[in-house]
Length: 256
Image 1: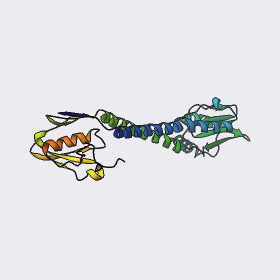
Image 2 (image 1 turned 60 degrees about the horizontal axis):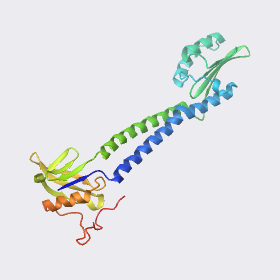
Image 3 (image 1 turned 90 degrees about the horizontal axis):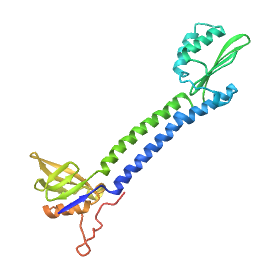
Image 4 (image 1 turned 30 degrees about the horizontal axis):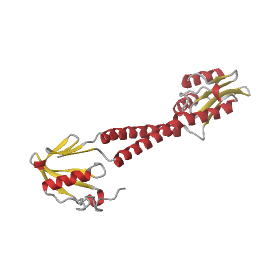
């Protein structure tokens, strides 16, 4: 006698569905965080600068952390010469995205900084994007990373699911790497079968009574395997069949 089974289509497809969902949402959040939202902010900054978006160079150094340091540099001075202001901006923010004779612009993923001469005085303008802030862009990236990790975990579980092999033969039951000999089987606990769809095969191992769960939603030939175990060991089967047709009666758990 030998009954060999893989996993059910339902259990495999469930993992495939979650894998597609996690990876799909990861791609969605990554697209917004790495491309769509920064690109929208570039268009916003380009409009203020009066240049086409393709001329704007985004500088990752232009962020709230750098601006806090810059504010600390400038806090002690009420007025500062334009060349000195440009030097301090370059020291904190790097080279400008666009430089004109009396205007210098630094554009980050979610803000821009403008240094200009107005009425003979150096002026500094800092504008933060109201539509796609730095924290919201960062949040999209973190969501993408978290969902990607979740997708990789589901992928590993899916590999385990599709490689599941359950074999019942003259040596006993083998479920992947676990082997339970016939002589070690002592009982079948079926209390949860009607409501949850699984049973516990009780057996002795190392002088201790143990139990191993067999799930009808996970094992394709669950009915055949359980009935064969019950027939050989004299256990009460949770699955009954019609003596004339051999078909399983309606006491199996509902799918869903």
